[in-house]
Length: 111
Length: 113
Image 1 (tube, rainbow over the protein chains, first blue to last red):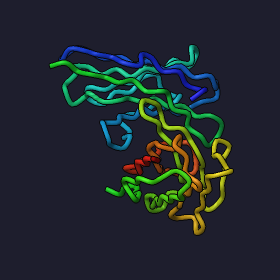
Image 2 (image 1 turned 60 degrees about the vertical axis):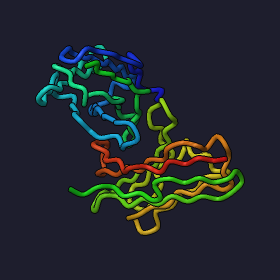
Image 3 (image 1 turned 135 degrees about the horizontal axis):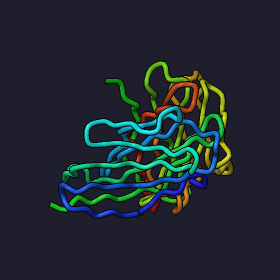
Image 4 (image 1 turned 180 degrees about the vertical axis):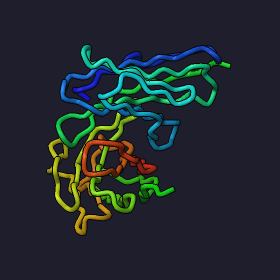
């Protein structure tokens, strides 16, 4: 989406290493930032989200950090496993009612 | 756990034919979204409903696409006539009234020949 830029577009990591995906957004009023994981042929599923009143949120091996000043947020996956291989999408609000999605990052975890 | 339902899961049609997709959101969700996802890209919003009203259809090609949510529950997206470039995954999602978590359905994969 035009509101959200996501990098990198592809990411290959060795099993056990960390993966980091970064997104930048343009609307300074944005206050909700979800991350979705989409496995091949399946629906996007929410894996973690963060609101603008916190700078970091963790859920087991997944964490999201938010820098409101710089208008970027990042997904961190630690101790990657083969089942982490998927396409990951970030999103940010565009206006009051819409989410604008990034173009996606294809993560491949090498065994 | 409640999920968004969509049908059909796959649809193959010839160009110039009409196709229709159906979505049943999670019970109680006021907002329903239709997205188009081209392979290798993120979901692109086509239309958004709040209850039975359209709140955003700015990206919907209205010459051939239509969407309705008559009773504010399930929804239908129609394409008539279908074109080759419409081949994509059509995803439905639902959520609460504010911009927050959206839950996606399994999608309808459309192939136009």
